[in-house]
Length: 63
View 1 (cartoon, rainbow, N blue to C red):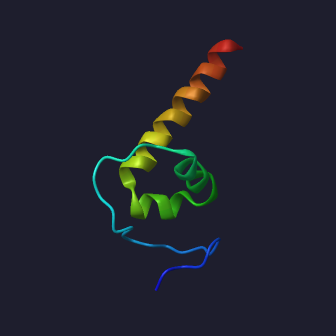
View 2: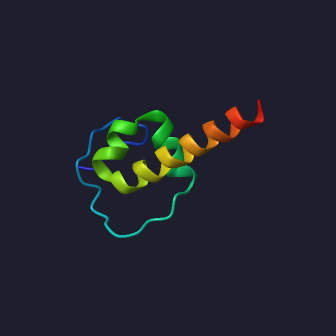
């Protein structure tokens, strides 16, 4: 059964595999529920974690 728009689910499998680009939808998902993103797309979650760490380091270097 497909979840309704805006419904929170913990899907273990999104049904899609392969290299995915990171778009605004993934960024919103990461901000809203990183645990679900980890379950469905661990590679995307890892890349967004790396981006966050690099952004935090850049901000710290500016101080």
